[in-house]
Length: 488
Image 1: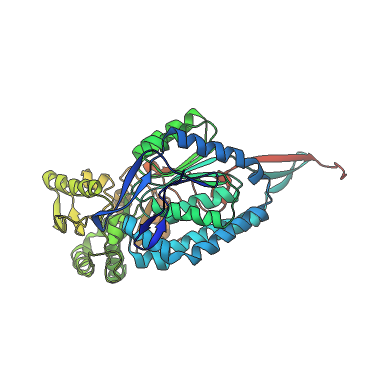
Image 2 (image 1 turned 90 degrees about the vertical axis):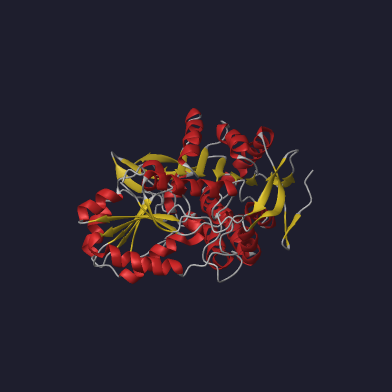
């Protein structure tokens, strides 16, 4: 039996799972609190275990044959209807997600939640327009065909949960797979709202399911189930390794985006005002963005003037309530995460790294942390080599292009990089040298949904985006027909 809906500041949200087209409660729950005010409990959310994991996979497995048998146009129609409903409910979803994980409500309303609708439309269109590779060889006509792979588990992080859930689930559904989505326990509510829209879009029962709960409980049960045929995860390298081991046991293809420590490179010929403004933007959303350029690498000849302009741009930030339009920096997601971020800065001080500015909690009771810049004692400092995932940047200098590239590639991560230069030739040279899945030149977070997305090193395995995602969620086969075979 399902639980009553909870009122989240005027929006009714189900705290339950959505399995096989029905709301299902659990005997246990976990608390979901707002980072805007940690005394504010938003909901007691259903806490799944192995029983609910089994129910969800069983439902997805049962629904898979009929969903896979639909034509690509029939499946795409469901995705298009869902996209329309997301567009209709952007304001409500944005409000709840703001309360749940503290991203700026204005940004969610104007940019992020709408991206969820675009994800479903984009993959519906890509699936419809797929052109199989065809060629002739050895007296045969060859065609590469996609086959739906089967039940798919998608595990998403607590930052931008709605957008990242749709980014992963849309191609899985478009490819003909059924899906079990496990959102992060720190921001579970927008995934539940998505399921209301799935039901309104009349998806067949079992095609798209949500299971709430803790990663080491229901998440572990889902990824270990041998009936699951694809796993997609975004989160920490530590959890990624665990999921990868579970996937390997069942020989299940696995894609993972595991965070970053991106370089933000500024050359002497760059537009320094634009570079400083964009660098200060790395503090947006409390620095809780895996793609952010958190290691400022600046030409030594302009280091002082850049730092001056960067600090001026940083001072324009406003730490405050994420519901207010004047706010530019949100609180961190959870007290445990605030302690983690603060721990990095405290250890940096002990290590002898220099805190240029910031480095303190904003208030004793809140979850805000000051924008912080640290000049490390060496490139081996923990603050340089490990992902902080908070409003903490480092600054280092270089004297030539080769040294800049060496510093940029000197961590185990390789998700993204940012280059500011007026030289297209330099951008192309560095672009070929940097070890990163995405490199932006004189811009940041410009995304083409058809481009491959993912990381190198401990930043991840595999690629999502465009046909790369549709290929991942499919089993590919080659059909060879001997030339001269007649029709009929």
